[in-house]
Image 1 (tube, rainbow, N blue to C red):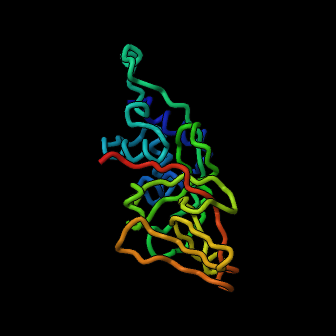
Image 2: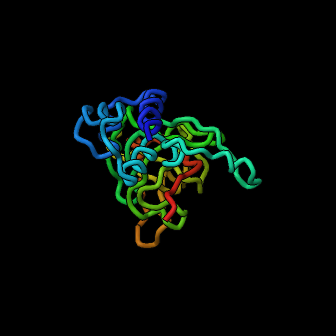
Image 3: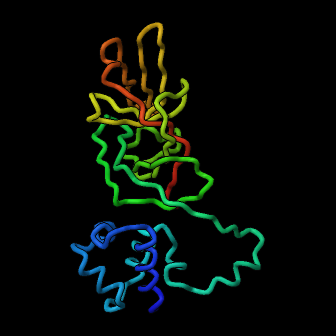
Length: 211
């Protein structure tokens, strides 16, 4: 198990994550607890190992360092090359909500995802697009999207943001943001209201936990 603690430190440093940030993600109050864990002075229960693995973008098996030589004998096992994406807070799937930027948080995901950053979905307005509360949504930064695409749209002068299907009608000076849940009404903006709105980017992928 000693490899577990050295792996925690190694992965944290590779991610450029502070001990304070890791403590926050794993339920500890301050960096001193992380220092003790990385020195192997604290025995971690399986539930905590899983929390550390999730925070560091890996699996509990890999974090512990168990031998996975047998995997190479299976033709349906594919190893994924990973890169880290900055998490820029939460994005409302419902009523627009302030997006809090947190530069110390990162998500590890496959290099085939051509995104610039990601956000954590909050709410259930996009469930028919299979985006649920707590999912990680990967976003490609761009200031315009096509009608019908899912976009991260900032409204009310940069203070609130939402994830919705985007429909813009230039000739009518009309913007409609549609939910993927019939329980939610459209968000409609017209004329001068459009001056307080801009697009952060297009949602191109999402990541869910297995239930």
